[in-house]
Image (cartoon, rainbow, N blue to C red):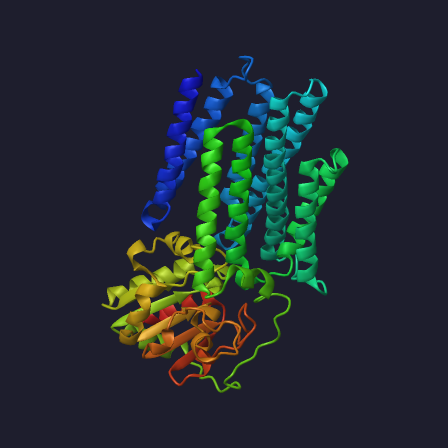
Length: 475
């Protein structure tokens, strides 16, 4: 049975890697998710029915285990069914936080179990070595899992609009102090200089506090990076549980999540041309952001009527649509797809330009548009679409702001300077759909709005797109 369990764990691990590979492409992502989920189900039930401890006993408390599985599955299923695409980042943060909490709880349970074993046995050199090894893993799982849990819940609250940006005076000094305190306490606890449950739970409390203060000052513009970073934390914490239980599938799954989250974090930082340290301490788009600023000193914008915008797109050869979070907020993705279809029926080539950090989490725009049956081959990444703007007749910017701001290339004093952007200013005509002239997450004005070939179309994205579709249909 033990060998069969190892083989099943190996099969499940392969499904994780296979599913993760398929997640890298929009057209295979759904099946990749199902394959990885099937592997996880296989690993769970194999553990329940085939696992035996060192004394040859199967798992007990099966009624409680299956009750927990049913309740957890029901809650997760309902939440996933009810969530809107605009709220997907919040749900990802919440679920990620639950993973971190599980890892921390595992560390707490195993610490108490270790104490019980040591109290009822005579300490041998072998037991002492095993004790020190387990303490390192328990502390790592406790700290990383607690930071991930607390940080993810704060991120959830901020994305949901229930928690505002908050920054203490000397916030970064406080955070560094807490991090150093965690390091010192962990070393002292490991060496036995301090011991006992009281100090263990003090480390837990400090970890939770650090997780809260770590995410509190980080603003919305950096939330994609924070989500992927916390996701990698949860993966590492889960891998610690794999070490504790000698569970291969848990270890491999945790390593995959941790490494994938780390790679994604680095990718997001590169997309903004910023270091991870700058994201974590810079408060870009956070509570320290001031009001709109612009090196252009402002300027005059030109408005365009829906009728003129419809004519401009109807008789264009090529139109590129740039979606942003405003599109998601207005739930306008279906109407946007309808506009695309009507334009294509008239012989217009239509593509979508996707910036790596558009929306509030990596891939947000891809999933949002795919939900509306937009063809995957029309979703063009920034590096591939930028050379095409020079041959584009009309760019329609729907709810995007900072990712199309030329200040990233032209204004060294701008907080987004150096960030790769969608170079929409190279197109022949630009139509920007916004509710108002309010600045984006970075809190700065957008010089694109004042360029001679830029036209502003104000209003709710969905309502405006519906009327725009009707205008195009009537021609």
